[in-house]
Image (cartoon, rainbow, N blue to C red):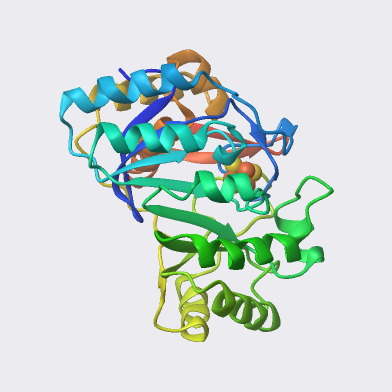
Length: 312
Ligand code: SF4
């Protein structure tokens, strides 16, 4: 079993086998995205502080590395925006001393306007920011940011970060049907993406149960049209297929399935019963859905997982 600050390695379409490192307690974030798979933001903030104990996090990663599992990336992500942690720079530096495994940071990019944050990320091998909008109106609809963040500032920070950062930038564009997928918005996104000059563009859509039920996915054909507009540098990464990786434990899958068989449950319910990290549980839920053992239902606008009973 993992310590409470790490999860995985989980198979990730973008990062191979990724060991997730969570720096932020659920759910502190500067955004409250309608498509968020973790649920609603309970503390919308841009306050930077040591949310979780830095040395404990490092100790946890060290223990996992000793096991010698195959890991492609050490990835800062998890239960909120990782750059809110005031010691992320120190953590990256220490991990780089500990191992040759590359370090990745998933971020919503909202704190990159702070020069300290830009400097602190400079030792990471790859930074994966998400961009969903070019206008304040769409930004507010889809990301629901803390009020004092302007999308223009986020885009300007991404452009300036690109100029000083020597590692790779893989920009994710998260598309939600009817909200940021119009031709005019995609063309505006393209103009900004050219200025940001990421090494790769990852096109994604809503594949896991979103925070708001009206956050709907684009079809593969619709994603393909967006890819054609954005050019060769863009690739579609939306996928519901989950591989069983080296850290996939059949007993955990069974435990989760047994909980769901008893009664429909939410992600939070499974979290409190098992003590596992949300992102770890999502990996098993993906697989159980893929195997048609469970399905998602909605009640009072909450997502519930229920068992699909097999006929005998
Ligand atoms: S998707 Fe990321 S940025 Fe958006 S609310 Fe969830 S954790 Fe925050």
